[in-house]
Image (tube, rainbow, N blue to C red):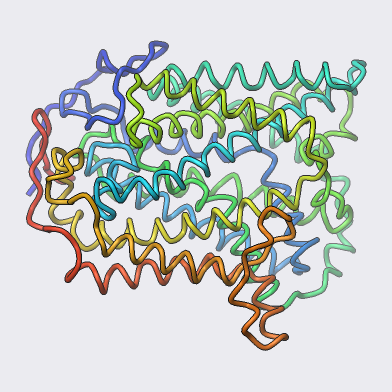
Length: 500
């Protein structure tokens, strides 16, 4: 039964616009709850409007050999289904008041959760590095078109600007992020439409119609998997970080719906446009600078708007990664204020970008390996998190005191969650492959299968889907017998567990 609660009409002192947010990984008390479910639309639309989504459409044509209909289906299913997971995990933020990886302690134990938090942190830092590097490369390309000589100095300056803007916004925190993402949505959404208008003439409709159909496993399933890994699966570990401030009286359906719709809308359109362009230009899927390549033939007058659109869309995603990465560090026990943990994250991003921008020579191989390998781990984690939420939290809520106590009801280690995760990961990684040398060790289970079947499965990235199913099913089966206490939760002081 819902309990009436007073929600502040304005932002609390701890989370004010243009001020550094003072909350860390603590539960957000009732007195500080504010915002509307529709705010989730701004946050997730802006962070997924980047033109990099066009590259995923190119992947579907170039690497998975899909026809137009197959590619549209793979893009739609992969995007919406994966972001639906983000929507449901966002619901946990409203119910539990805490960041995503703190809430994850209910399924893995307070100490056992360190394993999955470390996986989450590596994923977030990896995305920060990749997206910031792409933003710097795009800026260098556009500046070269405007007359600056490309080279290390221009590239370094581009990186400093992109990283600097991102870090400042992430340091300020939640309230500023919500407002900035609202501005980004309007600005970059409008300029992306203009980009489509200017690029539509490059589409060769005859070649689009002649795209051959690809195989089911290696083509359609593989395409769905890579889209899921690149979009929703890459965000599941951050979902509750942005919904934890919402009042508990907020509609649960609205939280899930606005998150899923806002996050999916841009990528679906971008993927379809990428498919249409790639039918006539396969290099969009293989270039080391995909965002720069998309702007190479644009008219000079649109170069600055394109630069703002391309780089701004990437910044909108990176600042969420930085913010959530800082919360992950605090969850791991780093004794710092939230803004200081974000600063540590920024340093790691800088170090990673030095390698990506000035040492590495390819884009797709390490990117694909990163997506698929980390995607398997995050898919397994998400399935277990959601299974735990469905079994226990929707009814009984999260205990906002015991989430921080080793001696509490969640225990130090939850055997059900940890066993389910490890089994799902071992099987999932054994059924995927990567062209990147760094990830050449995966796919070990495929060697025991018939050659034809192994070949189809290796190109399908089906291990991601298998890991999700195994993780969820195992937890549902094991948890009632091996999990910690599941008596109804109590709330922390200053909050209530009324349900909307």
